[in-house]
Image 1: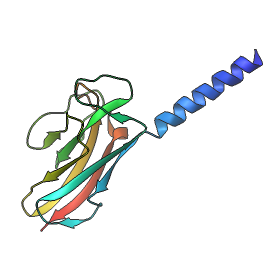
Image 2 (image 1 turned 60 degrees about the vertical axis):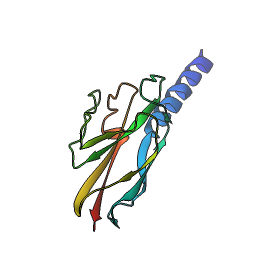
Image 3 (image 1 turned 90 degrees about the vertical axis):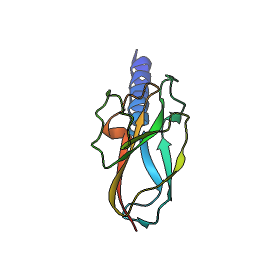
Image 4 (image 1 turned 60 degrees about the horizontal axis):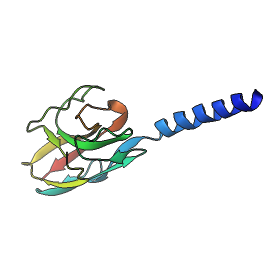
Length: 130
């Protein structure tokens, strides 16, 4: 009985730590960067796999780039407009054209139905376009 309890506790701990290690980040540009348009944006994800839209395999999804847009709550569908760019083919980088100014870029990871994984799978950076 004790071995089963220890095994169950170990499983729960591993499961919780694996979830805690899920995150997204910008490879480039760096937070606070000054860039010229067009500029490259590279995404990274840890603890999950990138799959195209429509694939609902557990622990997978794809990137969305939000430009000066409010975060998308967990479970809500990421809109498709000029402020919410979808990378439904599983892309991990793109080139972005923006006029000069200061911007907040947010990366939002979402499942195969474009449903946001929420703030835990989102990352914001600020950039200036010259």
